[in-house]
Picture 1 (spheres, rainbow, N blue to C red):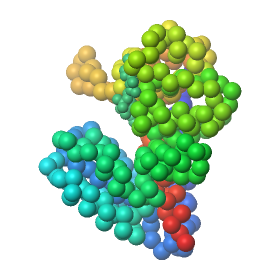
Picture 2: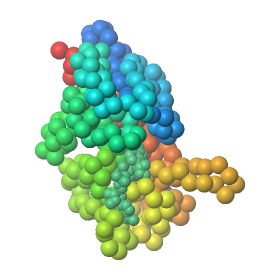
Picture 3: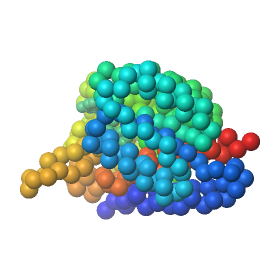
Length: 287
Ligand code: NAD
């Protein structure tokens, strides 16, 4: 029977550590850390994520400078707001909640964020630091995956890791982090033939696709560690809906040594790493 990698509990512990850290350094800096989450339009899932981020900020003592803008906001308006936040000394982290409505260019907007305030760690400068193995802001979801492995003393060194999904948000950065941690890494994706043959090789399997039930028990090596990044909303037979990952949890859990639940695995870790990044920038800006 697998041990659960409890992201919710670890995220709570990280938030407590951050709250203590803020209380220690705040008298020196003379203000709390600040995070600005920009939300455009009314996507209900995004609104829930933003609320959750702001509540978590409040819990640890990070001031929120978020703005909620109408769906028809222009690129120039958003760019102007980001420029103002870049200059605002009360703000240590800025992020644009994705997806953006209409044809707003999210990549071009991301490039407008000052790299030292890039709380999501997705700016090319920060991704470049990751490629080079230099210090910098790390993408939150992949950093959350690595922190979860570390908490349970799962050392990737010498292990075979398989990532399913090659996005710039998850698949590519987590690959680089696992390489840095001395794993042997394979990335599978939508054009990989015989996915099962690849996933069955994994000591550490990280699906990040967005397809419920993609990873079944026969695709997992006995004793593997499975970290499920996928988040999918599925209809329940009795009505309503629930969140599931990419892994057929009920059957896969019996094959693995460790597994993350969805919800309660990588999701809360992503928020914890966002707060961590904001506090890291705050402490960097101390002098
Ligand atoms: P994406 O759509 O950008 O990328 C999906 C990847 O999956 C692509 O690289 C594609 O090649 C691959 N893929 C698609 N179909 C496949 C198949 N049949 N077999 C193998 N690979 C396939 O998605 P993303 O932004 O990387 O997100 C992936 C999932 O992770 C989504 O469910 C998303 O909601 C979730 N997510 C969760 C968190 C979190 O905090 N837990 C954070 C970010 C994303």
